[in-house]
Image 1 (cartoon, rainbow, N blue to C red):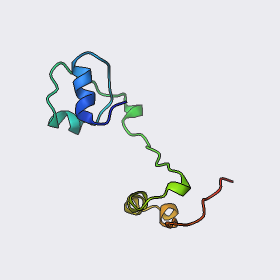
Image 2: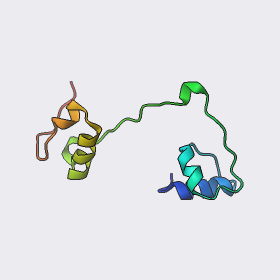
Image 3: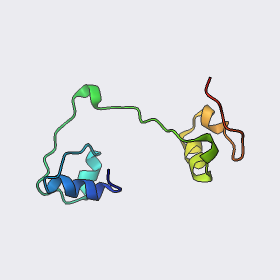
Image 4: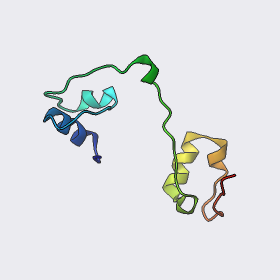
Length: 86
């Protein structure tokens, strides 16, 4: 688990492991020693869940949710009671 794509690609280049990164990342970093392989079509598009604790709905989280445009996200407000799972 690394905090930047540059670090991830550097580790892969040094033989430390493998990674799945957006192709656009490889266009912006030196990728010596890194081979590109396409994912099978079934994995080309995946859903990335956006999950956070209701009590931790910080302004940045709410702003991102608003940008994403989901009606469920827009219903959240800072200081609102935590939602309970049904």
